[in-house]
Image 1 (cartoon, helix red, strand yellow):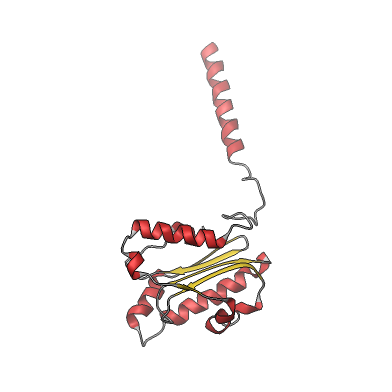
Image 2 (cartoon, one colour):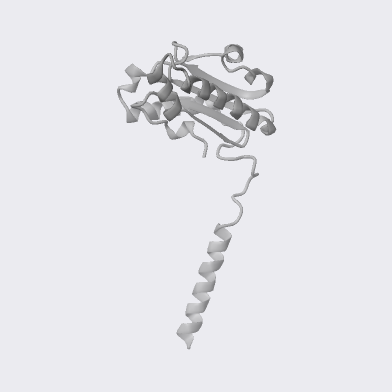
Length: 170
């Protein structure tokens, strides 16, 4: 009888602990995967370091240069209509190459859906480029737009390289 009572008490304690653990994560739902104010330049550097550690040849084969929101207005029309806390833009020197990292933190998280739509249109345009079928296939198969809270990321690399976790919000 004492063992049964002890068993029930232990089981109750275990279930209580599990229920507490399944509660709220703390913080707001809009905070998402990254805390607001995460330095996106640092995150970009971490992601590229991870890429280079996983694929040592990437340092010779992946070329991207920093760019500005001024350029993005012509490259992804409509993207300039929104306010950003931070934007980190790295593009391949050859326009259209499947090699880009775009990291944005928006001022207003209500704008995330619109920015995702613009970035997805950018991917779709590149994926349907019949002039460069190999590059188009890389855009179709490798490009990813993800978001969490007020952050929106687009990343794409050529076939031989998987996206580092730092560039995927899930």
